Image 1 (cartoon, rainbow, N blue to C red):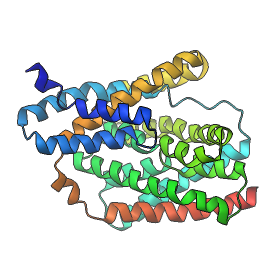
Image 2: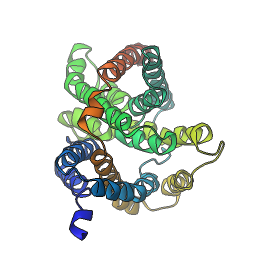
Image 3: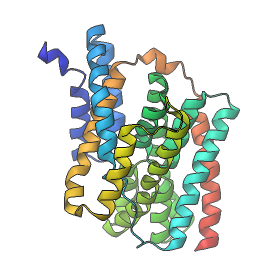
Length: 309
């Protein structure tokens, strides 16, 4: 019995370990994918019940621990970088959401796509999902779509650097302000040196911090009780503040991977409860609107970047 209880957890742990050694592989995307595959192989209602029980623990745990990542940025970046990055996050989320609604994509799925694009990919989708309560297949679709679009950015951004003759600062700003997930930011900047990686991740940190604002707003409108903040969102906000100003940085760095592990197990369990056919029913529209919204927002970002630098 004990062995069966860990089956839904194993894909998440394997994905976490693989991502730890090869950061190009996003742990949360792999966890979901491995979970879906495992769920299609182990077709047991008892295992699905176990998976539901596990994610009810790991999801709030992961959200609270993510506060160690969503730190309030220190005022070391130029104010124009902060403004441009915040503006970029806003227009990416807005365009993706508008295109999704115009194409009749479900409201909650539209929100997940917008949040995942504008802030921090799969982590933002996971946190927002705990509040808006989408269907599990919509959650899965959002994770898969955001990862595909983000990987496209990793492939084409080095070409942008050559085509538009970007400086290293401009390139680090481009990656940090517009790529979906932290691992993708690292992958797109790593060939250009550690300094560019650090600058891009600092910019990305601004967007990660915005999840606190989004989670707070979403709690007011989508919680079961209106204007009620779930305990784990409140704890997440407290941890974010404490890790920004009071908890030593070496402890923060030590705890950060635990949020990824908790989220990985969560997504593995969600994938275990989702069938491939349910994901396929979403069709191509979520992917199309994510590409369209990202492309239009990216065009506006380039215009702002050129006029600023």
